[in-house]
Image (cartoon, rainbow, N blue to C red; front, side):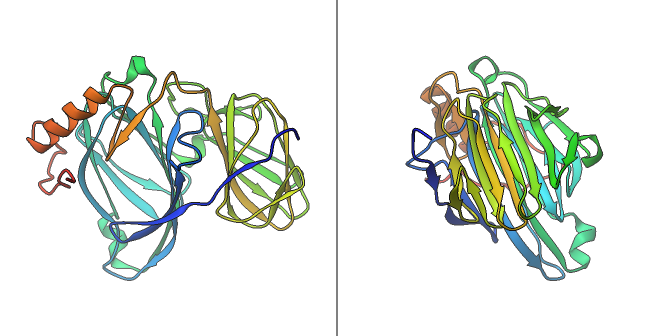
Length: 288
């Protein structure tokens, strides 16, 4: 291997009471392919009557993708979507020029103790789609392609890779795969995408012989096939895609190639000149 691995340690955050780890964006790496934001919602046991409740908030210039390992979330947005998302499903929302949404624990689940664990990522839209219309789609777990060979299971969450292609309507070449490896198995990660990274959710792994700790995000060298070896049972995601068509600014919940678009979005949200989620009154105000 010609270059040392770039290893990013995530910072701990809290989103409405849900503990998360956030390796992207970081000072070392602003994005991997279209992925500009990466949140690992840590495995959390909620007692009866407690859950997540992220009030109405806006987005521009990105797609959000929610993927749960355990639990459920209810997605509602200003397009009129109202969808319960379960473990293994993909919830895909493209913001376009203006969208608002709500994410919360479904009411029936609040009647019991439950566990929530999953990932939410933001993918920057190509410039041609930044100001387009919004879109939402839900993809049940059974619709995602899976390969299971020699102790290595791969589920293609979004995009394509490993001879699999997801039905999620990504806007640029994308790789986003969940990987489960039994002890002493090996996964070859091909160089079929321009930019790639691995995030280890649990287990002890090695990349080309270098030890990788759980909750480490490793950016892979471009153009190089890599070997991921499982020293124990390993749960990880491999993600990336084509390089962005120019730099992106991130300000609060807004992503844009043009800073003026962010300024305009901030002004409109503060002025309540924004699409609203049907039936929702509460909203998260613009931070100062």
